Length: 114
Image (cartoon, rainbow, N blue to C red; front, side, top):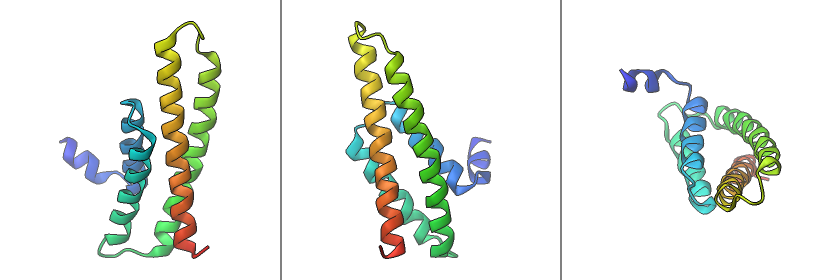
């Protein structure tokens, strides 16, 4: 049943879930950036891939991630500085989201030929 639900997801939504899950697990920023490259490669490798559609997905993904970075920055400001583990986790999550957002931006630029 979960496979059917996942298959029914829009590619953008599936990518967001995938990236959010990784960020929540504390995956390192460089790994998050590589995951973006993998996702973009999958999108471009689809049988009916249209670079314009992929660019639209990247635009939407970038917008979502930019909002996520803003939210994460706000959350970091609420973390009690005396809670070392919480500070570390918040910092790792923020760094992962920033790296992911920046990787999407690079992919957008590469797709545009910028």
